[in-house]
Image (cartoon, rainbow, N blue to C red):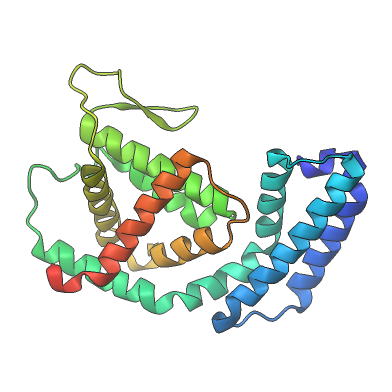
Length: 244
């Protein structure tokens, strides 16, 4: 692990490990007070970063350490925090689920709808959300799913290394406008939910909440754009039942 490889910061890292162990063992998280727990984790991270930079004689932020600390903290507290996040967003997720089913029942399948088999890779990408434990990793997963959705719609291809859409792979490829991107992602998420078994239900609102609240540093612009698109989809589907 990256943090473990920095011998100079071992005292700070050891203190952080102890704090997280005690947090998992003794801290009680209530659904209505999730942000209190979040502030406690932010406090641990800030203490760790301040001590680490002092030990490393650094006077400016190091994004590798900043990101690694976020991933380490959220990864080590995820099994304690995530069930509470799901409970906290249970009502919104249920409304979202019912609205999606209502939309899918009323909406006629037209020629512009994404072919399920052609966009299976985007479905599979979104299904990874439950297994990812940091805000950054969840947002990056959403970005990959959005890239794959655009690729399926426009006959473009995705760079497997960076999961970014390439705009030169096909003579038939045409870039998508922002509203078309949003519509395509709405279709993808609705099809994913409506074709999933109840036991495989994806907590879309909970993932939105977790990715937004447990983000300890800013996302890269391309990933932030994808997450903003995802948030737009969740909000639209949560509040638009009367339009379907």
